[in-house]
Structures are given as C-alpha cells and as structure tokens.
Length: 428
Image 1 (cartoon, one colour):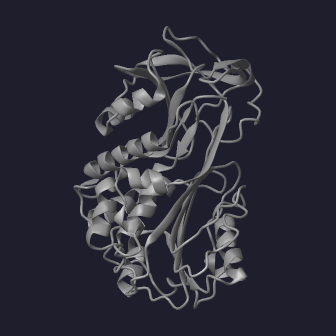
Image 2 (image 1 turned 120 degrees about the vertical axis):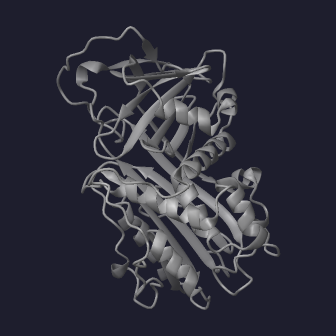
Image 3 (image 1 turned 180 degrees about the vertical axis):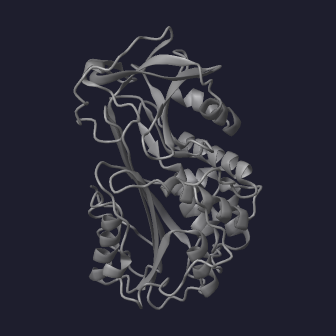
C-alpha cells in the first residue's frame, strides 16, 4: 500500500478500499491514551434517534430524499472532475461526503457555505448530520466478521490545540469518528495514525502516512472498506478470456457472464448485480459507441442517475459479460474540490473553522484520496480470485451486453441510490 504524505495545517486524507477477508473496527483504546482520546467520556445523546434496520421498515429522517439527490449530484460532479481522457478513475463519494460533513460542522461563515454548496446546498447542517447518520448506520447494519461496509473517520489535533466541547459532542452524536489530541511532531504519532487505520481496515492499509508536516495543527484521515460476495457468483463455466477494446490499446482480460437486471436510458445501457450481505448493489453502465465516458458523464444529473439505478423494471433482464478488474488511485483532491467550489477553506487568512477551535490557525491545506476496488467472480475480492467450481443452469436472454469497451461502474446504496464507490474503466 502506498504511503500518503500529509503536509500543512489541516489535512484531509480520504482512503476508500475494497478488500477481501475479515474486517475489524478500530480499537483506539489499544492505541490512544485516555488523555489523547478526545471522545473519551462522550456518548451519543439519548435524544438522538437510532435505527434498527433488522426489524421491518425503518423510516428515514426528514429531508432524506433531498439529501440523497444532493449527494448523488455531488457524486457525479466528483466523478466528472476526476476523469481524464484515456485514463481509469475511481472516487469514493460516500466517504468524501462524510468527511466534508464532519468538517462542515466546524466551519463558519463563507467557509461553511462553500462546503455546503457542493454537498447539499438546500439543506442545513443539522439535516445533513441526521441524514448522514441514517445512511452510515444503514450501510453498516448488516456487517459480519467477513463481509460489510466499514467507514472510519479520525481527526488528529496538536496537543496544545483547543477543541470545542460542542463540536466533540456533535461528532459523538452523528459520526462514527475518532478525535485525538497528541504531539503531531512526535514520531510516535505517525505510528498511532497508521495503527488506527491499520486496525480499522484489518491490515489492508499498513501505512497511510510517513510524516506529519512541521507546525501542523490538525490531520484528518478517512478510511472505508467494502468486502462482500455476489448474491449469485460466477461459476467457472461462465468465466472466460476475451479482448477489451480500450481507448489506448486492446488487451486480454478475464470476462464473467451472467443474467442480470437490465437498465437503459437514452445514451447508455447496463446492468445491476446484487451483493450478498451488504445493502449495496453494483451497476455497470456503457454509453453508446459514439459517446465517450466524459461526454456521457456530462449528460448525467442526479435525477437521471437515480432513475437508472432505482427504477429498472423487475422483469427486464439481460445476459451481461463484464471483465474482472482492479482499480486504485492515490491522488490529491485539492484541484477537484477547488473546481467544484471550495476555495476560501484553503486560504489561511480567510478560512474560518471557529466551530472546531478558538484558534485562527486552522485551514484546509490538502485533501488526499486513496482508493482501491476490485471485481472478481466471487465479488469484491482481487480479480485473481478463482470462481466457484461448477456449472450453473444458464439460458441466455434475448438482450446481450458485452462490456468490452469503456464503461462506468458504481457501488451504490440500494435504497437511496447514493454511490459508495464510483469509477470508470477506459483501459485494462
């Protein structure tokens, strides 16, 4: 795993990883002292609504539909701003939105406005907190020892830096985050940050940073992990080699074939495939041959994407063939976020994070994204993973789709349509 160097005052690292194997939650008690753990002694307020998704229908909070549409729009913009001609791309919309929501709670005046304007401009911060808490709770409800969606957020403050009680209580109420205050310049702090991330991803991210910048006041790390099997895995007889016609060259790839839910709209066709345990589905969307992925993405809106993902006919099926692939990215989000509208937060003189601290030093210096995702016969494991031996009963549908040219893929919450992971494949 590559190391991400965080440099300057307020650093936000985003790491979204799709992995195989058991995952465990981050145990800060084994890494942080009680003094270092700022949330020690904080509990979620009894007035905060909690959700039980295992016992029938659970009503989402007020404004959840508006929130879902807004975060889906944010996801599309995040993808569009990450796309480069002839290159693969990968973004982690839910993790990115969660981190920005966490920071938004400490941002004041125009600093908060610019964050909210790209995240959910019509909603107040309290509504964003309520909706984010509902979604994150829902995504993690069905986690098991081996499968699930795990999200980790942590903020690390310099030990002389004050952090407001009201902010910490808000974090405890609505975010499954860890708040720490320690000497950021100490070499031990690097080990602590890496150990927390290591535990929260079950060892997948062994080392996310190698140094903390001089005079840093706060460091933010976000890690998420998704691991699950297909509800209906691809058996060996449905896995064969073929040719992928990339934008740069043709390449040999391992293709998987199955009958899946068919989706279509004016400029694209695709399919949806269910995961086994998590409330997350996978969608692959391929534009018409005369349209590039960038051109198709420019046509997308939240309403259109949600219609594609959530309103497909239950009786419409296709025989879909898609290649195995591994995708990863380790990149700065700074230019992406600035292009989307966050500018004052990066300005040391204009940034206002008075909701976090009384200090005027806090500003957004860099935002880093690290993401990894795989597609294989068993599910979201490395594509080298072998398919289950056997031959499933199979009869081809009248509609056939072969993803042997560039396509967009989305792992999304199957209730709201909000993307968890989202990217494009131009070449293999």
